[in-house]
Amino acid sequence: MTTTHTARRRAALVCPGRGSYGREALGSLGRAAAGGERAQRLLEEAEAARRARGGEALAALDSTAEFDPARHLGPANASALTFVGGALEAELLAARGSLEVVAVGGNSLGWYTALAVAGALDFPSAFRLVETVAALQEAAETRRAGGGQVLYPVVDEEWRADEGRREAVERSLEAAGTAGGAVWRSIRYGAYEVLGGDARGLDALRAALPPVRHGGRDYPAVPGRHLAFHTPLMAGLSAAAREALADLAWAAPRLPLVDGRGVQWRPRWADPAALAAYTLGTQMVETFDLVATARVVLREYAPEVLVALGPGDTLGAALGAVLVEEGWSGVRSRSDFLERQRGDAPLVLSMGRPADRARLLS
Image (cartoon, rainbow, N blue to C red; front, side, top):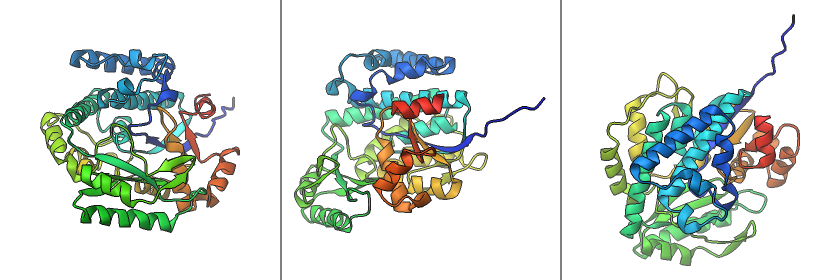
């Protein structure tokens, strides 16, 4: 008897950060948990931990009829929804078994999800990390400390580098510093730069950046309820997190991890103490470079497809812009990318898009 084996696609998983759980993501945790017994158990573990810490039930948040920014976007809820949603989806993909996962990365909060997906932290420990950091962020918000962020596009409508916009970002950073503000690059996010700073710095950035319209939206834009993540303004939060989480049990990952500098953490060889130091220290106070993450994933692991985990569908365009910058597989513009996406071998599949999700889980 001859047995036919279907070749698994080489895939890299990329986990989204805060801001990915929006109106369109309502119900996504429930759908993921219903997809498998293991995913259901993970959600139950998360709910038990939330109850023990006095947090609102994730199922209740996820099943509301209307998205409530005041309720859903606060750090304690947004962080948990984002982390658990991504972790459940990774579990569903693992159970399906149709992908050979060659690397895992994430953007900002998505790094914590990546730690769990790759096995550097078990699920309860990673969730405790997420909840602890979120609580510290809420405390900083209450004190009106920790600054904020400004978002600005650095590509044109075809996702090609726009040198004028990139120079405008450099000039704005200089102008804000001259005005006495504290500003830094927070996140390099594909087609966008996310700049973080204190109140004076943010005012100076908004004044210095030329208004532009990109993708149907006006910029510079200010993300709601975001501190100046990945800047030195998070030093106090980082120190508190290290103290509160000193007993976390870190391990070398089971799958290759690529962090927010493009540094690789390999199975068996990664130093757990160094991984903890990066997660609770370096990445909190230095730029998180998703572009570097994706570039290293592409160049070092050559996946056939990048799978953007949910919740939401915020990573697809960001990853597409990196593919354009790299000229990956002949993709040199947004039009090239969209044409490739319509074919039989798309380069990015997003769990937050129903058609992509069905394709990945079929």
